[in-house]
Image 1 (cartoon, chains in turn red, purple):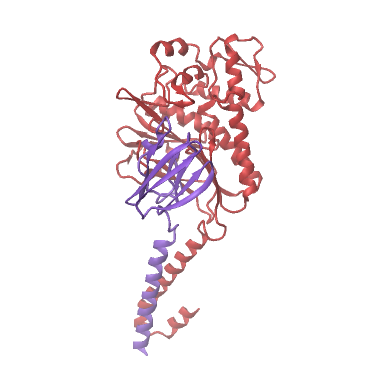
Image 2: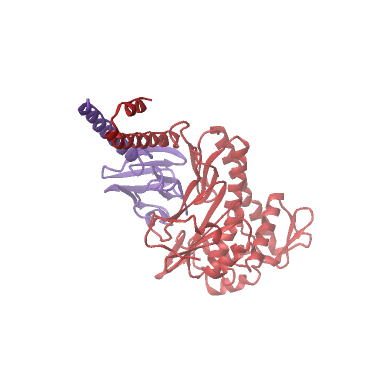
Length: 363
Length: 122
């Protein structure tokens, strides 16, 4: 109001200056407005972190519309899934199922409905990815573990003795939510998809309890629920895919989407000068060697994005890209060893490079 | 009158420009990357100012960890865990980044989000 009165009182000559002044005022006011609509003004974000679930660190953050009880309920959902699906915990359903698998029964073993459904979905993703992701690899993955951590180098003989049975087609799905194995020695490992599944269930729990704006981080598996408090998309960064670095290679705007990255830089150990990372190629039983540093998959379901990102990393750029292009509603960002960034057409235009070492490849 | 107008113009412009710069600089989570929060067994165990170089010992039933704060960043200098994943993580200074020693139940989290994004997929 005051500005317009001044405007009228000014001589023509000064109008240019007055317009400039108004622009400055608008700029200033809009800057104020932005900080008010930002995450801290109206509702301070509510955040909880736990380090005792899914073998990783889980942080749930709600931006208004959800209270502490909502976050606690979501954590209980994750707790329940972790307790039943962990390959390490001796009381988990997967552990019990695997222990019995050596004396394979024809009528199989009864499992919870969600384990049955998730294992079935994992086997479907195996089929779609020509076995690049495989939930039947448990017999091999356990050889690489010591005290539940990826830290032990098995002998070639050990791997060869188990690799043949470790095939998703050896998992039989029987009526009554029963799982049987076609061969002795088949073991389930839902590690490549359980984190994503737990994320999906936590999202559903938060949404049920009224959360309209939240960020979930399950050991680096991200889910952006709703929009930011100001109404814009969330900006999710993709980590620089080198061990020991904490930067962001590029970012994408998302709303109601899971963003899952698989990379050899995340977990690894060194032995006799050789580095072994944790993503095993089901074809060899050894860490996957492709032309990629990391593979990120974006989509509605974190479980699917989890399985597909592992498959992409194992398949490499060309076949990984072809796989995701064949799945409706899913997008991929693949960072190759030559630091080129490849993306599916649906998302390529929205990628912002934040680390100049990486270059977006035009498709 | 003209002179007064000019003075008002210049003054208001100067004030709004300064205010704009201040808001721009401190508006988006001003403390990002300046403090690290330490959690032991899921419970907050303290906040460390990364501008003061020092060593911080964390001792609990699960084990021993030694953190080093230096030149605005923090790293796990020593840990008595088997995997040494936390030591291998290296120095961190960006908002949102973490150093985790799962066997000893120690989590170090730098306050804020990394520049330009809300969260990082990893």
